[in-house]
Image (cartoon, rainbow, N blue to C red; front, side):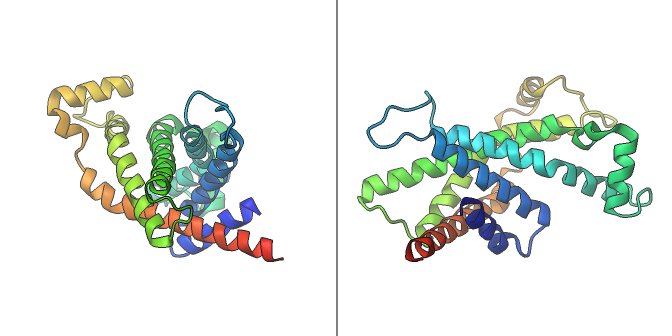
Length: 239
């Protein structure tokens, strides 16, 4: 049932979107739900780990979705840039395997993980914390769809703002080898260099457009997730 309702979320949310996004969301939500349930203590029980379960579950969700979808992202990028070299997706997949083996499908994975994992961890942690705070303040267990949409959007805004400097550093590292650009040794070197050259505003350049994309998406994703989860759980109880 767990995987079923998560898959249904992405049929609703990703029907008009790129299939890679839908696949990534499916594995992300499935991993988060599974890890969070296993690490969260039952009422009255001592915490199983010294850090919030939702933070660890969010990080695991980011890693799992990236590992699953990265080869597809790489294939999509290669087809976009070198469309004349490959005769379709399958041909690109075979040729890349022949040229560099399975490891070639994960070339450049580390910068992607640097961007995805902190965002996913803070996003799910913020969402879980905001839901618990909402229930505590209003003293009600049930949270409606509109409230979930707003909570999810706020969680997206918090996580986007908190991790955006890492996204800026990742992009600078990816284009660092181009002519006239500085080559960075690692993420910390990129962050310190940007801070030195452009100050704090340089670490948040482009945050507005990024939030316009990520914040509504986070809210809609969480709302669909909770709505489908609630419907399917109720159907199972009635059966």
